[in-house]
Image 1 (cartoon, rainbow, N blue to C red):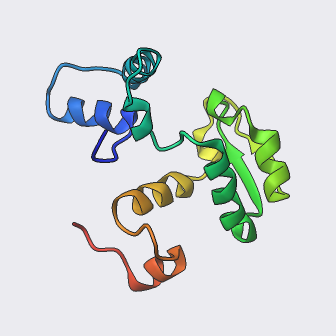
Image 2: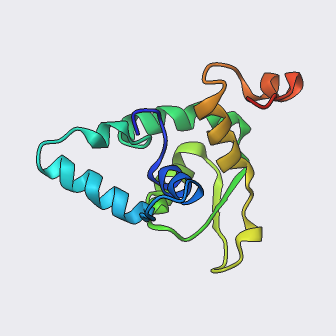
Image 3: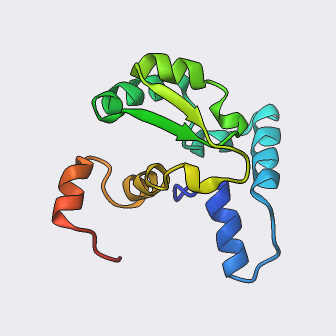
Length: 131
């Protein structure tokens, strides 16, 4: 996690490395147990500060027309997000993942590992290189 990996990425990597499988839910439970015990692992999670999230929403407001998400509990603040961005928020039907775009997830991974300060349009114009 100190390298910036999410519990989902850690779980997936463990499977690729043929290590003992651990689900991302188990990793999250461990992190929150650690927090209740005075630990600091939660500080390595990407989405830990609501005010920072609100600031990040304002940055993308000009580029957001609609949002379509799955029905996970991580979208429990969908009304606040829609109001902040002044946009429509839609939910995909269960088991219909094709109804929501992959681009948000992909953009997050690009930003996490490659280009934290550049505008995505410049990144796409210049192209991505494996590395």
